[in-house]
Image (cartoon, rainbow, N blue to C red; front, top):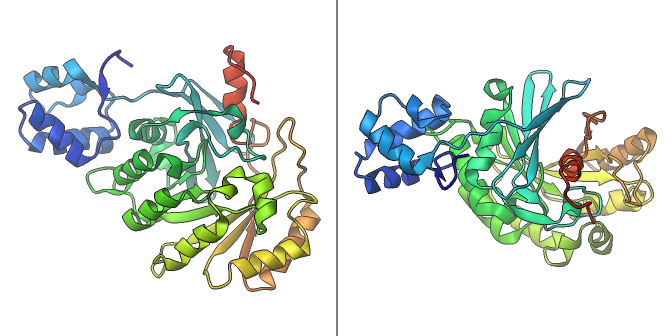
Length: 349
């Protein structure tokens, strides 16, 4: 990335229009630049050939497109591919391509590290090192090998998306606006532990799907797994969801990593069903990927199926997510942690 230059990628049409008018260019130039960035997916200003040479030169004096290739990737035997991107804070973030029949999903990151410090998550053990810009978020979508064939994007990678709400919502605008990538909002899902102000904005400013990281229906049990429960109680998040409009095609789901002997009892299933009563939703049960120095164990398949039946018997659509990419540091944050340490960084706490 050229030192000292500002990045165009990730800017909205209004921002690009304001930028070009400040440089004395016609307003319509903003729309032309948006088309080059998001439709034609150029990597340099020189490629913006319907801008005059003088305007391209003027633009290039202060700005750069901001596209960067991944620094490495790993391909799993099941077709899952994990990418590692370097970002402006000096950190590394992951994006994961997951093919599944007619779906081609990219799981993207929104922060370097995370402030939520969930016990089961390798990313949180890195500590928080910074927010990604909207350009760094969109760069993941445009710069993976499978970019042109993607059908879905999920904000389920490193970081808590709604702790970086302004940049995440701007990136969603780029993804879903006619002047951007033009995707249907139904192709985008955001996962959150329930950051109140960010969730309010997400629910009011987008119609994308929502996934809530739940993992334990009891307050104390969730607090043990997710310290954020102390300041962001699940009850508050559920109340906001009950008040939101999910009458159209927009969906809400609840993510539930199942740990052996921690959150897998019949009592947990009954309380989860009680807690979600009245919310049309799907419950996704997720196998736990073991991570170093964490006293949590995966649940056997038989016990997972039993827990699923408990929820289905109470009327909930429940799925067990297929474990993917287990041979390539599958758990979120593991590859970036390994590479960070290889480059001389500190070990996770």
